[in-house]
Image (cartoon, rainbow, N blue to C red; front, top):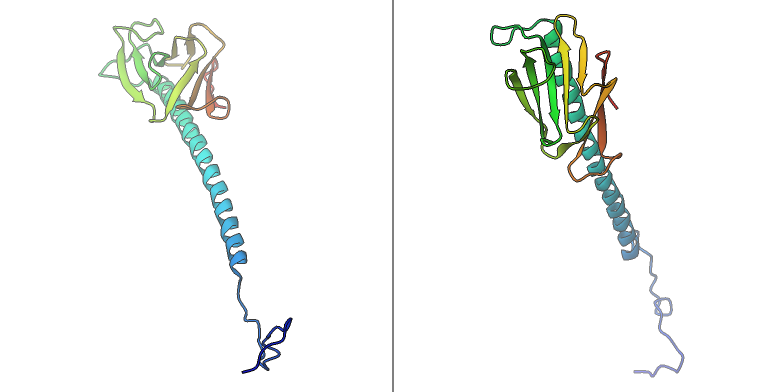
Length: 189
């Protein structure tokens, strides 16, 4: 057995062994790739949640607009409700009930939802969405007279706006407006 001299290092080349670097990835390279994939995934999940929230509010705004148009169609077609033809059909919103609204048949021609009128349907808003504001708080009556569909908004206004939002959300990013004009035009903004 020989003694190694001081400062002498034994390398594979000195031993006559040839080493080839094998193909593959180092641990650092793999960790960097995993980190990038995790970062991109987190960004996608966050944006997906935001899009989901906006989609739910948009969908509910379209349903409310559709139900207002439904009351308008019932007036234009002189729809019989419980074998009677009322003076008008309408939709009633109340700030105290942020999770529902009524489609009604106006039997006394006062263009409001009150005692002698019939509730055609109590519509519940999807869970997670609520009425944020009504342009004429605390109540709003939108009616369409038979047979011409003339639009009345009480309290009197040229147009009415119902703002809905995601429960716990902030306006304007989590809100949608349903606008009803005196002409009968219903739009979602």
